[in-house]
Length: 123
Length: 123
DNA sequence: ATAACATATGAATATATGTTCATATGTTGC
DNA sequence: GCAACATATGAACATATATTCATATGTTAT
Image 1 (tube, chains in turn red, yellow, blue, green):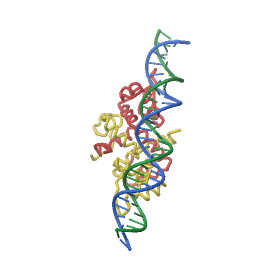
Image 2 (tube, rainbow over the protein chains, first blue to last red):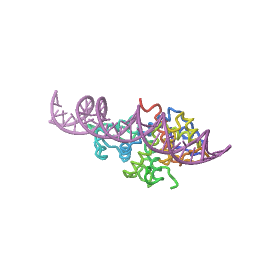
Image 3 (tube, helix red, strand yellow):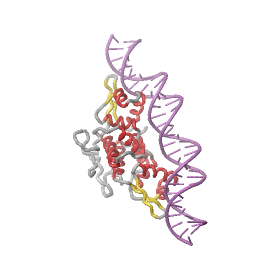
Image 4 (cartoon, chains in turn purple, orange, yellow, cyan):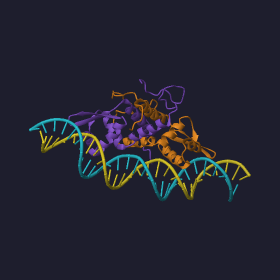
């Protein structure tokens, strides 16, 4: 699976398996909703955003986000189960980093929408 | 805003405003979480998936998803507020369609992750 | 082994959210 | 105007979820 970019927009003629216009079964749609649910929390998206600059240990994440250690740890577990972040133990600390480039692609695609619409979504 | 594709992955040298590595303020991160929250519900992602084939009225969406008319209508309102779908009245019916190409990009980026990981996310 | 520190986890609680039911609004044809 | 139909909306209820607190696990140094 080399090229994961989507090649078509509305053409529906391409055969890329991740073309959004190709039929997707219900189970995959359910998984997709679960994935976006993981992105859909401000603490988790802030963690993702922080890790975009490079790996960070739990304590530094906690410090940077101004959130409790337990809260961060709980959210990291969710991010880990979804395959979005990866832990690396070094002594007492555990350093987390983004798992793969899809994370940045999803984040960037969402960001493009926000910046395009501009202003706050909800009145 | 012509080219909304993300040009860099880990380079951090590009200047695209939607490069995920450029600093994003807290308010934007909050909006981003709200946006993904909208994608993070199975009913809404199924609506989006259904509209990928073209516009549909509320009744047909309701029928296709096997969900109540009220539930669909409530979810369409959320999708509308987020700027993801657009209504078009034609007589008694209201036809909904995807608002812009970002919807497909976000959906496709998420789908790529799911297909890449394979299998179900949560044990 | 024990102390000190970093992280993970379980239970409890408070809040958010999706669906349903009932009803309101809007549109068409008579 | 009125009936019939399509959609939207508000309230109520049930479920999901994020945070906190307390505690367990894991690591290092003495």
